Image 1 (tube, rainbow, N blue to C red):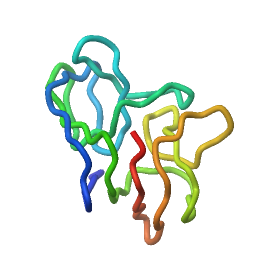
Image 2 (cartoon, one colour):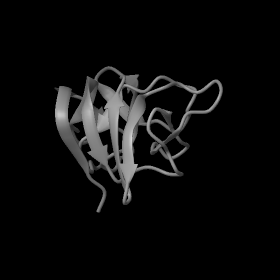
Image 3 (cartoon, one colour):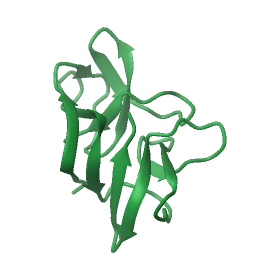
Image 4 (cartoon, helix red, strand yellow):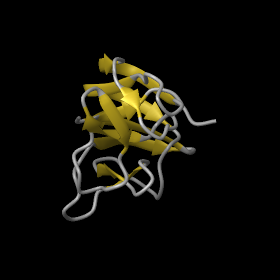
Length: 119
């Protein structure tokens, strides 16, 4: 089961409904007034990181405005100092050219990623 653990949390926003649902650790973007959906385009600006799995239409907790987090929801092999972006499924990955940076890797070991959130 995916998890996101705040170690030194930033701000948490919980008043926006999610369209289409999403899983813990996926990045979301704004799609309307207090409405979000999973960000499937790394070039678009993410609003924040889903705190827990949320069904379509539910209010979801979103971590935003910085902090330090730990998660098992990422792809690839990030290394300390790498900038992160979301992939086409909203999961963390190493940032590529022309992609919006959402964080920076602090540590990556044993299938767990510790990172600083930019958004």
